Length: 562
Image (cartoon, rainbow, N blue to C red; front, side):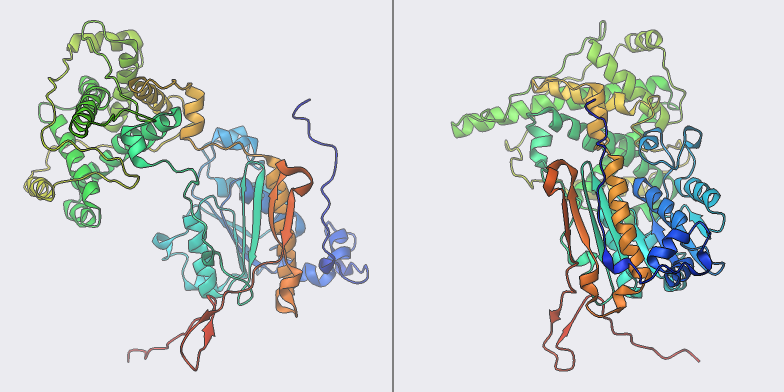
């Protein structure tokens, strides 16, 4: 069949790992006998005593745990393998993270995976943590922790965390094993103290190579992708995550809220204050119930798909009139507002109100209303009227630059801050923010994104998107290949073996290690193996220190207090 795996081997050998002779030593007749015959009994003694910190327990982390358990790493009583991951197992993980099963869904990844490999190898000294690795956890991952490790092994999916662990390895002089996968592509790097450049010496970032200009998303979309991105970045992130988070911060700790507010940009400050005020307004008449949630949803419907469209068209028409040049040309489509009839609401409007109101029911801890017929009756009974529109005043201007941001009035920010300073918070209802989860079909997240995407697409006469497509795109899902993961992990395991053998401390060490860039979709050119880049030497104008690398540091010992 089309997706039948190829019946062939990918062969990669590395002569520097093979020891002379075939003496298995005390490992003869054990599960490690053949490995000892190839790598030597001294290697087996060394790998058993390793202290390893594995960061991440997803697809890569599961493969690494499997390899470490089966090759006999960290089996000495005074050794330890520490694995940490904050995530819990989702249904979508089961197709590529083979240490997990259906019954494990909802359980911590690190704890579950550690339990599985411990059963495979009862001698494995493993500790599973559910902690994030970063500045907020330095009270736990402290000097004593890092100093006790032989190496750090990344199995991460984001650049920020990778840069942080690299900084720690630089400071504590630890080797770092790094890898990543993306569909048919994968890569690996080995970073060694004083020998190679560090991860932070590179220029990698999480920025998408095809990043969409914000002005396109905000005002001039012309592709379905633009509508999906805007629905995720603006509608969901702002309404369902940012707003309730800021409101709860203000409700629980006003002093802390205003302190963190000062660190935001003016646009973010304005948005946070405006949204907190709106949450307060929702509660002025009475306690929030499901009818209130419907009214909030209707306000968003009017603002996002009717009022904002009328404002944009009016402004751009004024610009066209004043300049005498056609404005609606090229990819700039003239949008059309959505419709509303309180007696017979349009189907797409009802769908939006249904998803949005239920999302707000979660935020305000109000029972959901899932029955469609009852919901429609509630909407019609509320007799929701669209607010009267009036053209925006002031100079006709619209952002058309890629880096254009929202312009805000500093005086308005000060006025809102003063208003909230004086506000009595007693009686405000507690709220909870949504945590985006693409795989839970009962939480209305993908429903909200889909209908929001398609209403915006209808505004701009763009092809609507299927729910499954919205889910894949908004969830940033790139199909994972177990083959890619297994292959790159096998190659990194070999680099780990070289570190255990101490090859990084021998002459011409760099010539004994490999980095890899691989794309299984490119046939004979799939594998690109190359030597790690040497440490970057930076020049100074100091006679005593003419050059240095990222690995070097100057420790100044201060006087201890009496």
